[in-house]
Length: 99
Image (cartoon, one colour):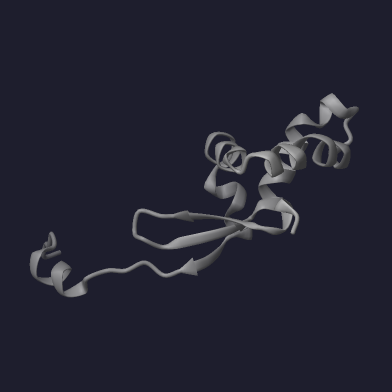
């Protein structure tokens, strides 16, 4: 299976896990480096980004965390696992106020 068919899954502070297609991250990187391939995004993807991501999956995380914002992937993200919350603990010990 090509690395571009896989998903990058990140855990949010509330425990939810969100899945983003690696292809979305790869295209973002390929677009950034396309100027080095005569403006050809497909060539940048095929000759540079895909081999890089295949050789070391950390490169996917590095690009996503350091070069992209949540707003760049939000439309492609899907909830993979709902977060957990101890509602009883929050109810009896959580910060509260009367508004």
